[in-house]
Image (cartoon, rainbow, N blue to C red; front, side):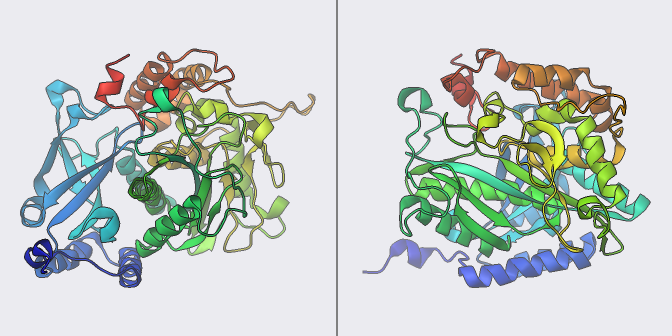
Length: 478
């Protein structure tokens, strides 16, 4: 019997091995060609490829939620310079009386997609949000990160590179987060680091998600269960900070969809289960100039240059102020628990995993610093922008030689983190006062829906009103 749908529909579906080649070529061209040349090339491709039906345009709101719009291909090509949306419908964006915002498609970010994850006949592109006058929108941290990296490259020749080790948990059932108050979380595997069975549900999920990520040009390095039962991590290669942040958003999206396809939920709550290790998003970053890693100094302390040590010193000095951007949810402060290798100490170390910043072993190519206190539910663009601006523009930490070193610790609850964030003139300077006020307001609204004391059990409120979980129905039930 003829499959009628197959006979009627002929949308683009590309094998995984071909996808990987195509997406790696896109990345290579993005590093070589101008924006105008990229637009010209991909416009031509989209016009010629009749089997593409839609362009998925992505952007991220102030708290880190990922938003996607599908544009008909012909409409997109005809209207790409005038794509608008209602910003008042996005939490943290424009007010109702000033709702219209623009989307500026970033042609360098185009990706060809695995059809079993995204559906056939689509490509994806990231977009920067613009104001009505086409100026970069102040609360779009992707656009602000892009602008800042362009500025430091033009002014000082600096290029920031990054990658992230994003951990998550796999729990049984679809939409398990939304149903938490009725069912709680059921872990799907008791295996942990290195000893899950080859074909158990956790391994099947990791294999499928990692395959999709490699096909999308992530250049995965290793994929494995993590320390806690039902916990996973898939590491992808170093790149410029903007692409690294894009990869984080796609990593989480692919993980969620693959888990959904398997009847499970991939959650990036930092601490979904008490009594076992939480999930982090260890963020590795370095600076290069003229093709040279300027964080590397073979004779420097732990192999780091003075530039790198100054960068670290500034982050440590402003650690409490920036903590809310790195740990943005009520639940994320459960992870900063010293009993489970929590990076809650405001210090740097090459070996102590309780330190906020670790110095991994490296060489001239790979030397970097690892900011370990980042939660996986943080807005990756805000994280990269905060770390980068703090490391370059912050005030270095000055030690009093007459006093014994006293280890400081990060805030252990969101209310204290909000107070540090709101009181900081430095935050207002690097993130803009408007963003400081809006971000604090949304974080306080979430905090007010949970008890101030975290206690020994995870409360339904810290899951249901989490910024990556909540929707209008849940929020309005409070």
